[in-house]
Length: 265
Image 1 (cartoon, helix red, strand yellow):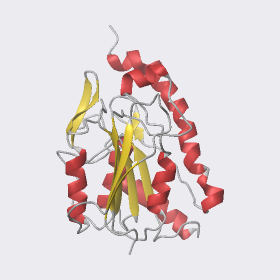
Image 2: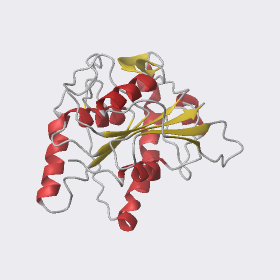
Image 3: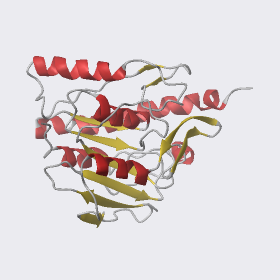
Image 4: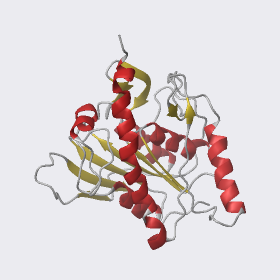
């Protein structure tokens, strides 16, 4: 009998195909904003699928590679070549990539100016070391995410689960403390709802001044394990697996809006 992972192989391959336009959406910012996009690829883990060695001690299928050094070396080579500003390095990731983005915020030296984590939060049992530098952090998460639970817990789909994470609130509070921020958010706004068929609603909460350090949470009510997008929408089968995709904003644009004012020391 096939495992759940084997049964889902065709759909996961289709997902990777569909993700390409979302990456292209961020790359579309290049001519307009004069940004350089470096799309890094993780190694294969014990399950023979590519991924990242994020902070979860109990994620047994992570590849076990030194991904922090890998990312640092890529950035250093771009800076040395005169193609990147060392004070304007930003990291964005989705799912396991979001957890890796948060690890880079914790451990990469020099630290990135800001990171955006979509559908991914902090490790509950963490291998990452501290203390953390002051890094601006954007979290984008769906309240009905079936893979990375919004309130925290085991990560995975169906019976295929590995590693645990803290919830969005706990992850947010961790970074608020690290960045010396507290109290109620300075900004709390709901995105205009554009598609009457879309059952989700997105609200933005922001702590701290725009120049940073700053923490922002975009909470997608009824949203699943998927990047919100105005233009690129997943098919029905993938939606059945991971939940509903919000259509009220473009994740790449929101991330860049968050990044553009941030500078590292």
